[in-house]
Length: 320
Image (cartoon, rainbow, N blue to C red):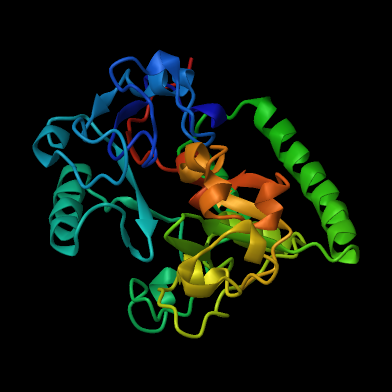
């Protein structure tokens, strides 16, 4: 949010993780940086370190810490929290109710809920947190617009560069569409996955904000569901190695039997949390996919990741 006008005088505090699971960052010395491409840059961490951190013990990976006692000592006008599948990300239902009650008592208003996962999560048939939920994921473009609306509501001094960034996004989207038409015309097939040499997890593009944006803009991306005897949930299809390389007998998976995989992928979007694994020269020894052997891969910032994962507390400040 500092890119669209939020200052450290207005930001009171944050909660939740700073870095993604699998990050190799040295939390004690973050200036060295991380190998994961969607982790925050050091200047972003420096901005966050200027304010109160209500989750000091869990900077890497999924975080369930919210120091309510410290929060109650802060001078706060607004609380913004990230919603995932209709619920408060990182907090269980009981603690969420307690936090919302205390926030409402302190500020005189409920916290602002920003859903980053399910489109229309509050109106989903049944429980949006259920694996049977039919609501699709929100598109990343919609989430970007939501954050812009939030900045407008908070009366941030939005810099002119943001309008230039929005124009650049539109131009990039148009160029992306043209390139994806070329991909379609040439029969290119894309797949998003969290790959491993045991069980891999193949993503449903309708459930992820980034993948849904890609598909809306024309990417020829595979949908999951082809494996008849595999398990999964609303987001992932779990596929053991032998099921994927279906021509390899008795679990002996090698490049000699990689001609007929379950999904004939031409280009992989790999979960960026696996960046160090996928870019190891040894990975294709255990997962000898032809597209990977040809280097046809690029990282996918699942869920938009750190672009929107810093919920915060805001204090109105007078402008000069």
